[in-house]
Length: 372
Image (tube, rainbow, N blue to C red; front, side, top):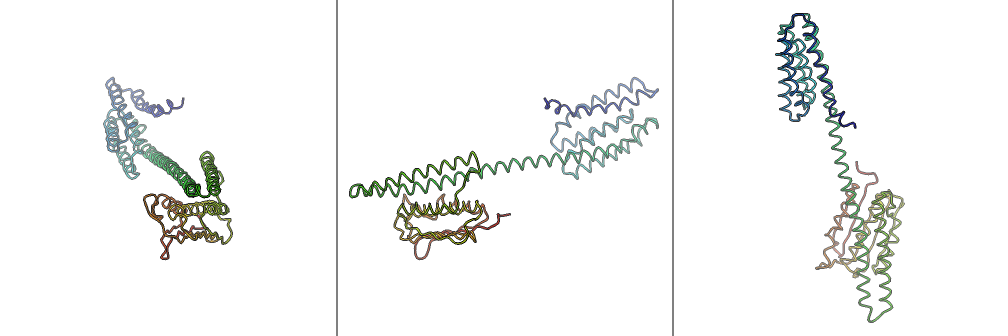
């Protein structure tokens, strides 16, 4: 119900056209020609007013303002109230941008109002009552229009900024979910593949160990399913519990169960901020998964060191990667890109390099305070 009222509200200002009736109604020398000229002026002004309301192009808006001002100057020769057209032009001048252009337009209109007072052929009493206040009204209404126009432009910029922030937040949330799903699924599938390959090799010679490997496949699958459900729950409720550094113990045990010789060393207090703890956990998860996928189980030792005091982590292995059609190099792929995005989002650094003695070293450092 409010939209029609808001839509037609600007036309309520046309009530000030009543100033054109003031002189003809009270001046005893008014003729029918004066009334006809007044009607023609109003008929010429109304299309200009409607065009001014709808116009968005700056040049065409300035043309409308000039036409209104010209109508006011010419009309003042017949009717002292015609100066109101210049006041309407001043109101529209506030929509000009930048502000400097609007100020110049209002100043020019105020000068025209002064000229109108001087050139008007209307008797002096009517000139003082109708034309005289026009200069003041032009300045006041023009300044008000400039302030209001700048306020609207600021609000429009804020709306666009809010929309952009919302869009970027949506993209960031989508990327977060994608990274979390990648970390969980890649880790779990890597472990499942290793156990499945081991079961395939052992099923003929050692059925008991093959069955044990398949049970580990089942356990890993259930854990992965639980983590995926947790991630999906966080989509509905962002406050879902995120992995902490204390969860690294379970991760290391799971990797050891997959046959990867992992040692885990913790330094300092592990009560680091939740966002940094989650990133460090995901880094360790992705790094260990990469070792399984790219170095297989030929690594003789994998070392994970977490220093909570400096919020740093280093993961190393001593087995050279084995590139091939099914094992891309450890330094490439979406996993490394996802890790780097996580770290950079918190203002940290990530370095992944091959060691001269063989193997790969991944090291990261996160600032204690969030980036400005």
